[in-house]
Length: 368
Image (cartoon, rainbow, N blue to C red):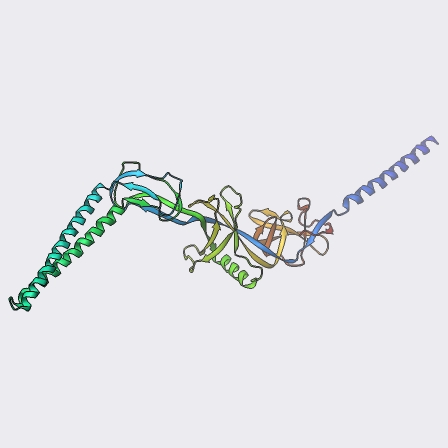
């Protein structure tokens, strides 16, 4: 009797164990709930960055027009100067002497011309009285013309000497900032020597190259979205920070560079605090409208060997890994070029927990 009781209890425990085990298996077999999104076309703005070469509105080399010893340096490197301000003085003693000589020569020739003029008047009177022949008058007039030619030549020499003297005082051609000064006081300067450069950076230009396809997209976007299109661009500085002033695209070159397949843009930036310098580097951020594009959140994408994949939901609620080609990437989204279509459902997040062929319980969410 005792043996039968023990047997019955053993069977009861075994049956209960089987029920518990069955519930665990059923729970384990249930597909996981995974968020999915349905792809749809949207309108957005594309932001592309291009390496920019920043140049001053004006950047001019200041070169010596006359040789001589550098007598005075009246500015310092990095100083702001005004238009017409004297920057350097070259020793002018030699040029002063040359000017004095030219003045003396001019005075002498003018005196000779005056004497020749008086001689013509005298001879003319004698000819009228038939005292001398007309040949004498012609000779006197010829001498007067020769004297007048000498005066013109002497006056030209005097002006040239005065001009050379003016070259010893080097002035700023416009208001700007003085750059490096390679010569020191007392240096012997040759004609054409580079004394410094002056940069007007109140306004700067940013030059950047755009590929032909991007150029076409920009132009088409500008033509098709005249009401909303803007030529405004932003500048990212070398340290990664954004420049506070927005720029404006002013012009595009007229030719495509055959060697690079690109075309140059020029944007103008105001530089009131003179933060930007001639020769600075940065990146110009250009935006253009993109209509009816498919955008995919970055969290839904896997990158494997330079290729991009998503998990697409099938009709039977299984997922299949599928590759796509992105057109570009903005913020935390990819814009699809090829490989996916409107209406496709893809796994939104949790892609690490699924694999090709995994059955899921989809939960529709808004991923945008």
